[in-house]
Length: 112
Image (cartoon, rainbow, N blue to C red; front, top):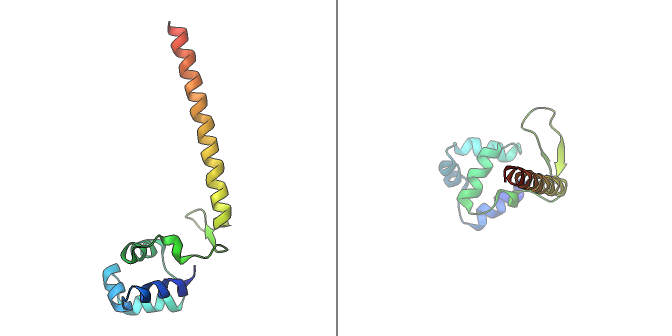
């Protein structure tokens, strides 16, 4: 997560920290503390992205590692590694769809 990118986008939109915090539903002091400590939940980041009208991925660098599981001890992957996982899952789904169509075809032909 690149908090400088978030702040640069905010400033570019001419929104103050106080205004953004109010729109998100947190106090200005909480917002400032989260920026200073580089600690913000994904839910807050999603709200900020919506308010700033940018995808949440704008706040991340390509080499940032993201937790892939929403639990302690989850595996960390880079954005590119996540893209590869998504591609593999899509390929698996395509294969399952083909298998389903084949089985449906067998059932239809067996019923005839």
